[in-house]
Length: 401
Image (cartoon, rainbow, N blue to C red):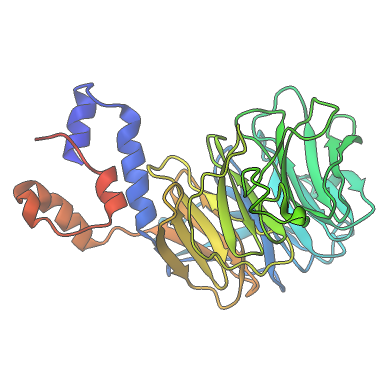
């Protein structure tokens, strides 16, 4: 730590390097916080959560009971032990509530005054946060599995929507209508994500085992089909050509810089792809248990070095190193299957929701022993230093000698 501070003060080091190192150390210390509770409002499983990026203060959740809840994560009491209160709820008593399970909720990227939800009742609703009334309702022919708003778009206001039918729908917030459809999948579209790097690039994952990357400005087909066999037809059966997984692809996420795409499938595999070329990076994460028939919401850290992936795995959350595939830890605390998790980049915290109707908060805990080891390390010979996690050791290496 002192090495980072000295180098930063002298202008010899990138100021962001200290922040990345501290963020990484905090992720390694993630534990279930017994002092922080989240109001239990849902009477059934929690399918989706989202934390707004403007203030990092409010969190949305959507459940199988059709209810949507807005939580305030701020601690006003000043005490270590507190409860994240539900600020408002679209409950069963509301005439606007979704009739069936809410599959995706998302804040409007630039303002907490609006959020979007989609449901198995074949609708997607754009909500006014102040009045908790829908400003716009889009109706579809089949169940809605997933939707996504671009976090960086300035030239369009499109919401990508994946439904029970193979066509990907693009809905325009400005006009309140569906602008066009993307055709190419042969089964229901389970997950859709806009690139955080290029506002016109969209990735979609389907039950047909395929992941497609689109440029929505082009009228022709998709830009890329992610292929686990890299085009080698000798390794794949006729049905498996240009497939990303050997089962339903129900999880999809870009890394924070938009350079890579992560996918999960019911073949119990997670794969990392180059988003520009569609090349499989062949990172081996081992067996990643995935029994979900619907969308699986997992998260990627931001601002760490190395970056981490948080994936629901049964009743636990598995934490992997993004580029090496190493299993860092398993976060255990839920009593039933975990369906969603969301990373808070401002505080390196993780929130997870599952079928046990609970939202759990995982926060960094820096153990006293770790702090003592760090303070004493400068007075010890390198050979006598205690063994630590290699990833953590690399993140904190310095050139003081």
